[in-house]
Length: 427
Image (cartoon, one colour):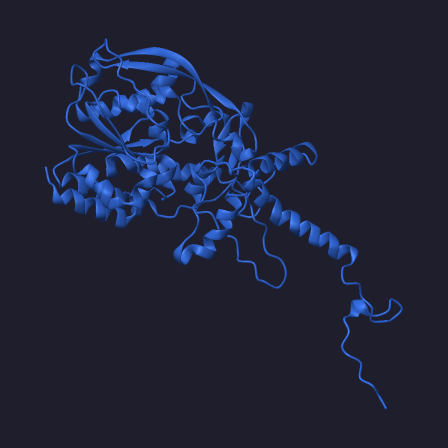
């Protein structure tokens, strides 16, 4: 009589049996321990109070919702990993000190195996033929220049791979201007030039995208003034450079110095009321130290020392006042009217270039509200209602956000909702 044995797990068989397999071999134990460390340590760090830091030139990704949940979950999880900043610094140190090369932080390798790899995109113009590397991954997040100068890589990547054509960008800017002016308000449009535009002398002789970025930059500045009515700040910035005998952009930061803030403020004020700045007295303030926003992208830390200024619109009373650098809500400031100060209500939509030097922007206005343009898409109707209370609308945009086609004020839905609010309350 044959007896059928119950099924037995292979790990329960005698070790001498040919089918014996241990339940957890050495490799399995190593893998399990590694998985526990990988998943549990970040959670434990969060529990004990180690918070993720926003060390890149942007805020941390929001938790994804809706149709973008799965597509945005990876970026959110990456941004919110504790000690990520320190990990980036460690990766950079190992790559440079041990292997002698700069790490391509954040670049994803091409897929391997049977999955077909898409053909690389071709730049819109001919690139430097001496450069090697696949097209999509060769753009640097930070361009390391001469004498340790750093440049924001999107200045180049956005120019070579824009999300909107220049024709479309110009068209959207015209629509925004028409929406403001048709409601009876004055529209002032000013562009903050890229650091790569104003301080090219420290750029490396060779970097990926050099040719196509130069061509896009030249085309942009040839068209943005005549076709979109932008104020050209480049002559004023060049004059400030000549006067101070120093670049008007920081070595370790993508923004301009406080000299750029004074140039911006004077240009806007003169456009609204020509001759208003003749009474101004601009004097030196104290030196301030700020962390540069580019070294953290390389896992490093460097500060920039900036000379601040005091603006007295009437030549006597200083009107520069502190402004939050990254406000979540509009900043409204008022002061008494007088010599050198523009009356009426002004609403200004600006990006990080505006808020980097906000203390000067508010100085010559009796009533001004500053709104971070990055937050406009969250509630364009609310922003439109704020602007509907103003007599003048000022729009400042970084060159790279327009050349790359990513500025939030280029969105048709945003323009339409702002236009609708302005039309409800014409001047």
